Image (cartoon, rainbow over all chains, first blue to last red; front, side, top):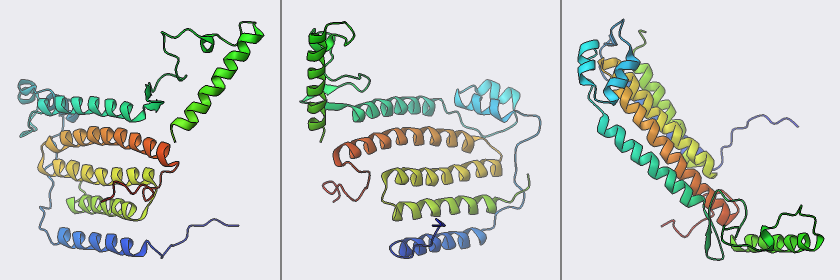
Length: 154
Length: 101
């Protein structure tokens, strides 16, 4: 069967009409606004990238010495604020991604549940140590771990 | 580079309307995030176009900050989507109802 895109007119008709009407209203406003015909633009021979860098780090001496792109404000405080916000976002994403099994938080980067460095038990023994009985017990504890995990996060 | 400013503003408004339509119609949380990103990029197009129009660089630097804030927002949003899937086995935004009102 072909899978061509279809126009679904059911529930999405009213939002579509709303979006198109909003676009039309805003376009009417813009087309009736008297913008200047000529854009000012940037002068030739000046590196816009280095000017952005000077504005980011408050190098006002370099800004005035090198460029004639005027009226660009310094942005060092905003730069530091954005750095703090990105750090907080990283921490919040880690907190949201952390699981909890049986009330104990499980770190997002650990692959096994309950494999803290302090515990020395049969679940710490690798399955390749040659002892069949210990491997069996390790498999049992792994199975119980997965059972607890699937029951814990629902 | 003699494109008039109206075309940039019209492009930005078209992007904004597409993002608004996506937010109003979609039920998938990931598509919600994509629609919000489209709307943020509409604002960025406006900032850069008017920076060129006025001949200073404040708009360009501000667009960089808007992109950084959009990245932070996506990090939080993907974490929320992860928790949504873990709790409801679905990323449909109409399924969780306890925090709706």
